[in-house]
Length: 235
Image (cartoon, rainbow, N blue to C red; front, top):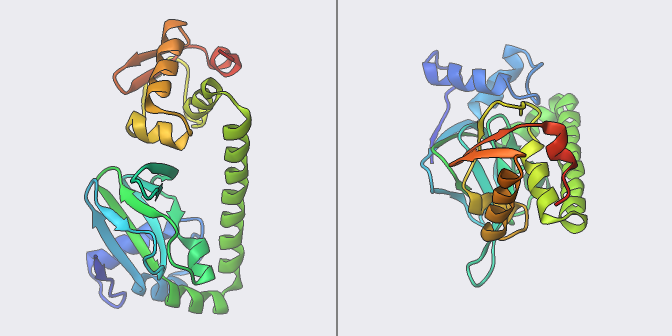
């Protein structure tokens, strides 16, 4: 999928990829000269909603960055039941750990919306890491933050009620403001899987919060009335 970027070309594609990469914290402080080989080893991948990006067992040859759209990382049981492991949005990345370990993918990834990805090739990245150890430090910092978030998820899903999980999800975005509507980033079934509850339970909790006046629902649009009141509700 996608086409190899020719960094020696003055074409718009290389410039566009360079601009996207420059906005990623990992590459933010690199000079144009340092960016050239990374741009040359990056592939631009448009993915339609519902398309599979890779499947469990596929070879991991680099890592992905989401430019626009949204991706879900899922585990699928032998019976075909999905468990959403992670939702990945614009500016975020996935696949770094397996790339470093030289392992095949252990999850399947699927686009939840029309999505634009960048795939940074492993070989060119490893070569640049040898030349610029700061890249390795930044990648380790990013992976450490993700591990910390994962441990927080384990605590949330094992020690908190379904109501508390849903409230935590609704309030996880620091940009959520009282009285200002926002849309659920994806379908209820996907969010429910991510929170380790059933879609029916998720819908019941939303109705409960709505009936108690803590939120107002209009389809996938939600408005929080009082952030502190919602955060302190225990059901």
